[in-house]
Length: 128
Image 1 (cartoon, rainbow, N blue to C red):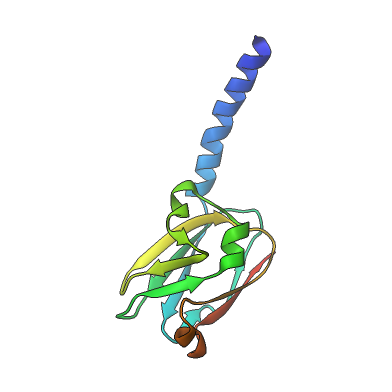
Image 2 (spheres, helix red, strand yellow):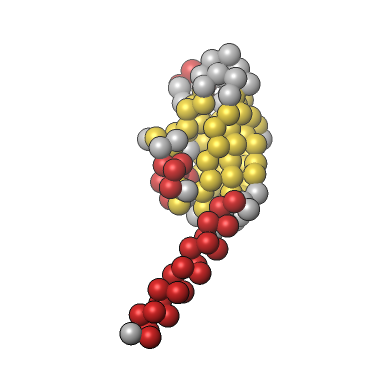
């Protein structure tokens, strides 16, 4: 019985620590235009929470597609709905924020449509 009580207490102590990590995640802006993703290379730390804020500065909706990154990263629970099919759609003149824990690797990021990719809407994500 004592062992079970100890495990329950340990779980309660661990839960606030995990939630606190999400709140203290550093924030990075990713600027989206129909012709560009800035910065051209996004550098993140592996296995550390990060808050990515996607800022759409154009008059049209844009998508940021990074399927492999989003499939391998652990997203905060409520951000799973924001990331659909390996992409984040950002309405015109607005922002979308996701918090995730990325895995080490190199990933491609690009615009959601072939036209935007042809116009230069591409980026790299390096997670070390």
